[in-house]
Image (cartoon, rainbow, N blue to C red; front, side, top):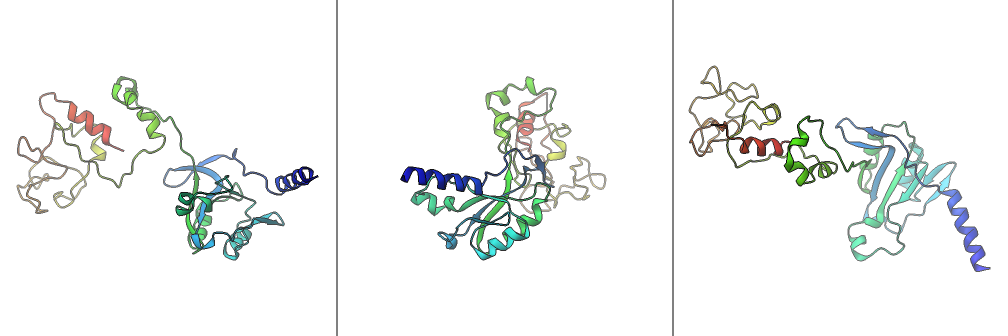
Length: 257
């Protein structure tokens, strides 16, 4: 009899809360990141632990937390699923709030940006992000990619599927000089704005007023005209590859996002 009652209860729960739609289209946000349409992942604050009681009212899934329920009604949230399935979270799970993370689903055609902004504004929500998509194999469309043995050895395409780098992070390469005109490098070179005296965002290796060279240390770091770096072997501000040296260019190109 107990088993029969349990089966009836489980069936009723399954009918009430279907799983979110994992076959929804993948869309791109303005910053180019991919996510599942109409889905967010939220982590509610530690102060709300033990208060969540998922229930449904007229097709809207509620948390039993007034602030969250207000957004469920506003955005017509039709599915909510806890990301942690195990019934007894560990101390580590609780410390980092893993037991407080939920996938929230709404209309597939709804732009996630305003929904995300509403959840971010709640004190009851600690973290929120789109339900991002990470691809595990993203080889570039470089026709010479197959000739670059080091990328395959590093499993670079697999790694790029998880993280391609952040253009706000500067990479410093200590190597031979670089081909400053290389098409994969030129547009990605960091520009020292204080030494870019013609203010065009490009290192012009000509003397002022035609270029950026004037023999003056504008930024006061002890190196003059270091717009993109410095040649510490030659003692000049032009780290251009010389004499057919290619290792530095190879490493610089590998470090660009």
